[in-house]
Image (cartoon, rainbow, N blue to C red; front, top):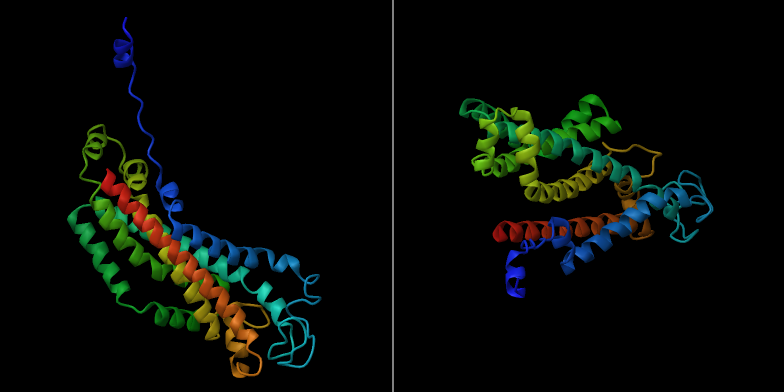
Length: 293
C-alpha cells in the first residue's frame, strides 16, 4: 500500500478547540483582571490569619487615641488599629457576596430554564412575575427586608440573592430558548428522556457561556451591595471588621486620618475592576466560541 493511501485511510484527527476558560485567560485584560482579583482575595483570605503577629493587635483591640498615626496606618474612630481591621474586614464581605451570588444564580437558572422549556402559559406566568420583581429597585428592596428581619448575615445573603434571581432568569431563558429548538433536544424527547434530565444534560451545558458572564456580573454587584448596606449600617454590625463599615465609621475624619477610608475603598475598587475585566473577557470569549460554531 502506498504512503498516500495510508494517509488517506488514517482517521482524521479532530482539532481540539480551547474551552471557554482557556480562551478567556489568553486575553491580556483577563490576566490583569485575574491578578487584581487574586490580590484582593489573598488579602481577604489570609489577612485574618496574619493577626495579630503581623500588626501586633487584633481588629477589636484598642491601640491608642482615635484618629492618630499610631501603627502603620494609624487608628480608627475608636482607637483600633486601621491595618488590623482592614486585614480582618474582607473575608465576610467576599463570603456573603459569593453566597448571595450562588443563591441568585441557582434560583435564576432554574426559573429561566423551566420558563424556556415549558409551555407558553407557564412561561408567560413565570416571566410576568419575574417582571414584577425586576421593577423593584434592588437596594430599596434589600433595605426594606433588612429593616423588617434585622441586619443578620443570612438575611443579607438571602435578600441579595433573591434580588439577583430575576435578572439571571431573564438571561437564562433567552439563552435556553435558542437551544431547545435544536435537533438533539428533539431526539431526546423522542426517546422519552425526562424533562429534568434534558435540562441538566442537554440545555445547561450549552448555555454555560452566557451564564459564566452573568456569574461575573452578579458577583460584582453582590460585592457592591454588601459593602453599600454595611456602609448604611444595615449589613455587618460593630464591632465586626468590615470594609463597608470601615468607610462609614471613619469618613468623619477623612482629612485628618484618611487611611481608614482609603484602604477599604481601594480594596473594593480593585476587586470590582478585576472582576469586571474578567467578565468582559468571558463575554468576548463566549462570543468568539459562538461565532466559531
